[in-house]
Image (cartoon, rainbow, N blue to C red; front, side, top):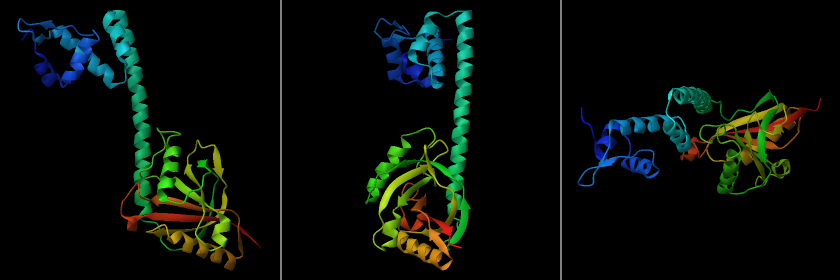
Length: 266
């Protein structure tokens, strides 16, 4: 077995970048010898250190934690390190399980959206929904996108854009009745940890495919349906984006659902 290895060999065999190896040398964690011609020569002991660094970095240990371990390497410190390593792995597993559940939910959302009945007004009862709301009006889609990204930043580990039907906008009830361009008052993200609440109760809803410009027409049809069924509009119109620009660049694939809170007048 070879006693020494050059930096290129170490990088290739152990899949560690040359720049990383040089950095570890700069901060004093490894100390290769030099050949007569000036080449760095790495021993088996250096390779062991590089493997320790790579493994611990992969589960989130800081370079300072690794340095302390390598500087005080004995049975007691090894036992302590393994316990910390086990704890770090368990935390990563929990995080991955949550991520897996979240991705499964978002996959289901997109698949479910593609099977929603379209262009049919229906009445249903919805429970209160916790959410994050930014009460800032907007006109252009680009403005809405910026507001949504601000909401996403509230909880980057849980809130996502792609594949989430949690994204929505609140449309002014007065603009809906005036039969003009709809007035978008705010954006929201439905989230169980949200500080705001969308009231529960009876809602009329309809789902359509394609351009958002249809919201004006369908909003009016929801009002007409309410009037013809002895229902009173009880709040602002909700526009939920099941499939939008974050999922597809083809506008014809957009799927939007309008929800209008109502109360019986009987």
